[in-house]
Length: 502
Image (cartoon, rainbow, N blue to C red; front, side, top):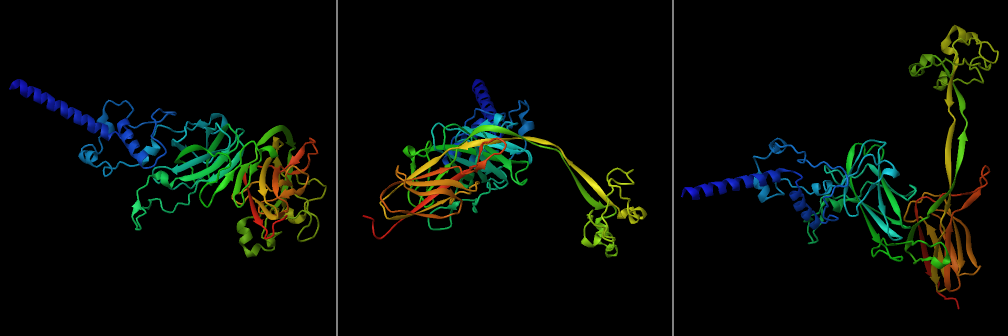
């Protein structure tokens, strides 16, 4: 019996020790096992993917400090609610946000430049922090096929996931040129869920990702693209955020099935043999790839400017009606007009910064009124702008060609920048029928401009977009063109006429 009792006592002690160990593990907020359990729940609720625990950056996991006294780290709340945590983890305070914030991925500082950007593992959220107005975090993704669609998911910090306002996200090409920019503010009014679809008001349980700010852009060429995150008007200063990216194949000009459908260009489409087909009333989204041809050094010489003001003039004196008779004060300004004394009408000879300059340059003595009361003296304040040297890039831009097959006797209405906010002023458009020399148009088109053309004969019509030339650089002799920065879209609307051409 003693042996049995000892065995039972030891077994009971082992069970208690094992139970205590389990409880301690449950109180470790970011323990690996709890994270796995939460991750399974997160995957079921619609997160991008199950977290991966290999840390790509130095992520601090609370409880992983090596402190031998775990009670010191996790004593708070240990004695109360432990059984509730096992029976009802959600009621115990198990939240969805650790699955997003603490997957084991995060930015590495410094990552403020294209040369030290952090790579994004597709489908995984990364946690970042904006350390101030001048902190811009850079990330990159790499495409393996042309014309892939990049989707960026953006969430704020766990305190309020859906408060995404305060940042600007920019998508850049291999050279760092901006091809798209997005405001992080989301239009989602209901961050708490969607209707369950049962005809009532029952909200549908959703994860924070369902309310993420989602932006999309088509990446034309295969290669590396960068995503930068910066504070907008100090709205993101000293705040955390979560960012994830996905790439999808778009296929050959495939439209989305919803009412906001659009097509995307496929590269290369630089000639009529590789033209992307336009569909009537469906916008085609694209970008003009550009290549740096050369850099030009521009030097601006130093410049000295003078501003003239009455020495005794202050805001308080300007506000006092008794001083309205002072020089220039009746104009509610401290500036003095050196060409005309407001009392005598004679030209003023300003006192320059040299305090010993009692007889200013120009040979004219200081007027007596200025000697008797120096407050009336017109002083010159010198501002020196130092010389500046900068490099100006000269670029060439890709040509984008689109095609449309008409049955003839059709009116074609063409517009650009109907779905996107274009950053360029105009682009050159050439419209021709087939491979013939029959031109319907050969000139510039601007965002918002509507051009109507007539396709009288059946056949294929080509729409060629290229940079608009503005002249020749007098210093270098290089052609000057309108910079085609950022995305654009082309919308063609065909209207068949009642009587078809024979």
